[in-house]
Image 1 (cartoon, helix red, strand yellow):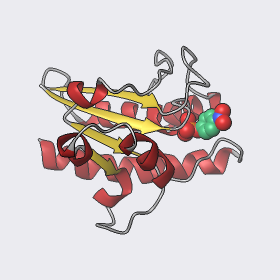
Image 2 (tube, rainbow, N blue to C red):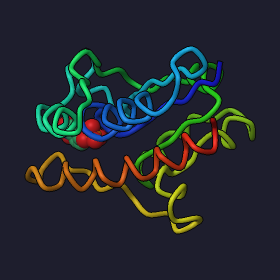
Image 3 (cartoon, protein in one colour):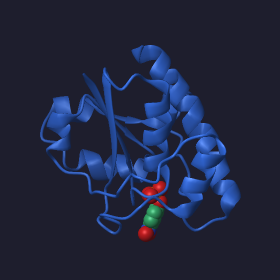
Amino acid sequence: MTKILMVCLGNICRSPLAEGILKSKLPEDYFFIDSAGTANYHVGNSPDKRSVAVARKYGLDITNLRGRQFNISDFDEFDMIYVMDESNFKNVIKLARNDDDIAKVKLILNEIYNNQNYDVPDPYYGGDEGFENVYKMLDEACDIIAEKLK
Ligand code: 4NP
């Protein structure tokens, strides 16, 4: 079983979308995919309704996901940890215990734009078009991740 964790700040906008999108591209018998936030603001909460809406528009149901906070034990549990932006990267790396932990953490858009270190913009304070934009970026990145892993 390959285990992949998607990480953002709140675990209600970007990373639940990334989780739902990647799950839809990989067989569940071989891949375990989860998401978490570096902050604890939304622990136990459903995804933001705008993330739920854009997922539904593209045929995915993410309503059953619930927010949780990233934990040091996630370095043991997961093979790869994809973060959405530079701030998530710093927050996760701060908790790393060794080089193996650090090596698991990658900016998800580097899958599309190698070494460019682009952020998936935080859509929380913006409008619906921000969620559409985030969906498209994550869908493209997850296509590449899934192709590499299959
Ligand atoms: P996310 O977006 O990190 O993509 O889930 C956010 C959600 C909530 C907050 C910030 C970003 N917040 O400040 O509550």
